Length: 168
Image (cartoon, rainbow, N blue to C red; front, side):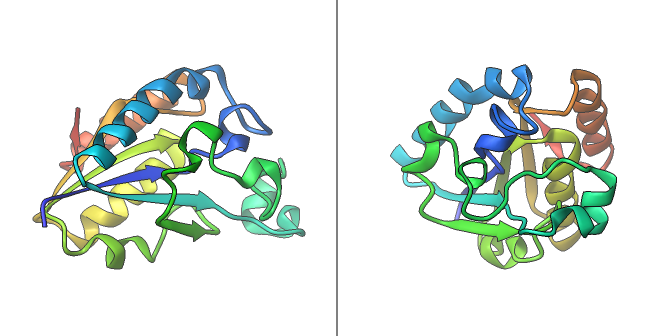
């Protein structure tokens, strides 16, 4: 099979909720356009959802990032309204990278990744997939990603380039 599009954590809490940023809000139209184009061309689309539970602040991540977010069942956990109808294939993950993602995309020659946050979950999943599939073409669309800050976004893009992930 040809190509799969992975949409990382385009959830309310990362766009305009607990951890939202203006940069995240800014990429929403481009992400929606890319997902719609993929769906219209019969490209497989896989969404990831950052998923936490009550007691999040007692986890290692919660102690390092003490902001409750993406609590399963909350509005912040949901995929943003402009993308929700396309989120048919969803992988929930309770950490930055999804250990289930390689199995989901193993049959595809090209893997494109978009979403949030470039410097945390996008880079984690891109590097995880590159480790599993060193011969596959893995792309990250910089215009469909946003980091915690513009600087950390750019740093993550540079780090991925160094690991032979193609930035488009």
